Image 1 (cartoon, each protein chain N blue to C red):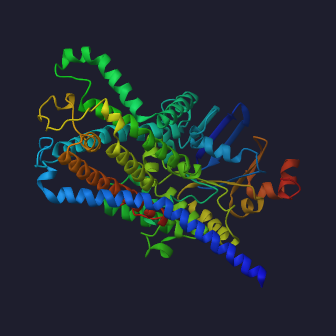
Image 2: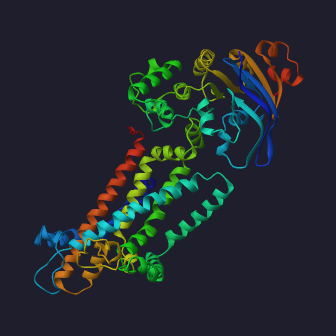
Image 3: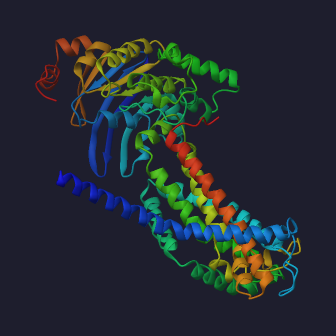
Length: 304
Length: 253
């Protein structure tokens, strides 16, 4: 009887320890999210809906203004980087996962090594590298595009592609490598070329591909450090003309940082509003990818 | 009768090791032709070299000639995809694409190769293929269900239907019953015999009894070479080679 009691006591102590550890890990996150929601919602409610479209008011004024240019900047940066980064990641993943000939395998091995290294790079280093590259080509590019500057939407896009593409690549490549060889042979035996076989396999891995793209998109939306030296940030709307790509542009992440550190009450409020919009965007993408992965676990989704 | 598949002095090496060593074979049209032999004798490699599935593997070198229905398979002007449309293949492990429906598994080949112009034509082709594989009655009310829900025998018949939907001239089956129970094996064997009316069937098996049950002709393969070829009755009753006799009487392999 005593033995049973000791066991029950141990079990209770361990359960309590697990619950405590869980609470210790979850509470700070929950507190963080609650603070962002509380302060962000208060800021947005104060000037809704103009806060979503206006530019920030003068620092220190009683007016709040808005984060319109930053929302537009994030939309432009992520949509262009997504459009460029997705085909690059998918094609690279298909190439390295489906490599057969020896030269393909050698290129694939080096690509994989490079991508693994890129995942480990601090993103601010990627930002500096892109800035350096853009600065060195700037004199040449200016001969064709007089308005070209290293601090620009284009540089921001390049940085975001370099930051997020490795994540998308690795997830899709892992998915392709997990496909049993007999499934690949089945598609190939139906008269499909190697490229077509890869495309059918990507469709077979639809949920994995969507989840990888969601992760990549979330990475783009939430990236800050790489944008300091590239997109640079701007609190005004850029003129929507042919030089749009070559001008500095704002983003929500840069707004959170620069407005938050400004010391002006109204800009700090805007920083909270930008944080909440960013949080909602990331949670939506996270929820979307979870939903897709859940669909894959359930096994079947009609392709038509 | 004519020759459907003509293999002439075929050498295949993988990773520098010779797997096929000068194989010669003539498969008459519209028969069941079984290639039997112990594991590792090169039977599956022979099939994979006929439809160029070997292209999927690294370090493969092929010498010799393979002609399928007049098409020189290894001619540099021959499109490998066209060869695989001409020669359907069913594998040892039933391999329907797991997250595609029963319908979509059969429709995949015709869709990839644009064999049909309308949805109605595709529906008819899918039905025809499933009927040929004696699966239609069992699945007609659940075509949208995932193929992975079918039993092992049904999955293998689905794979046969998928290959037939390409309207191939030759159907190759690589030990199609080795993962199935006796009931499913008997169903597939019955189907193989029926299929020769429409296509030439090239069956690889390590089971001599299966070859004797379904084949019109058999070839015995050992160590990358064809030891003996002939009509099934003749090979099983009066084998010309000692190795063949030992194999069919179960004394080796």
